[in-house]
Image (cartoon, rainbow, N blue to C red; front, side, top):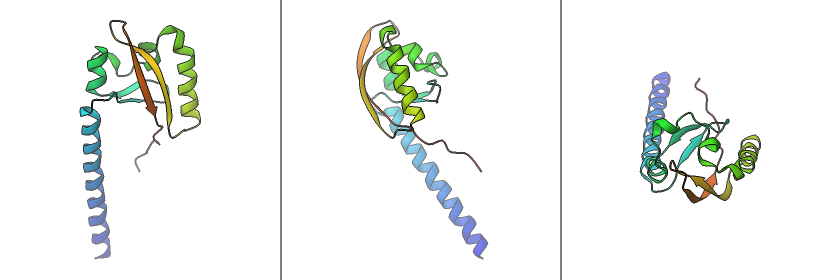
Length: 124
């Protein structure tokens, strides 16, 4: 009986986690703010439709690409790379800065960024 209760509780927690993840993902997709996830090598692993709409890129053109190579003007690449490296290495919880990014047709947009490092989870 105790084992069944544990299994039931685990299943309920897993269902709640899945529902929460779905709500969070929907929010990231639908919000009118730039939302982008990078891996520790600054490669794009997720971006929302708002980013695509303001930059003119498609998701296929961005996923797996280095964000600095695509969006950052040449004169700001070194500073941006250092900032991202510091963010990842120090596992900083929040970092704010403003910068320009380039659209697909090379126009400049000014963006205010709030960055946070999310801990990686591993499946057991």
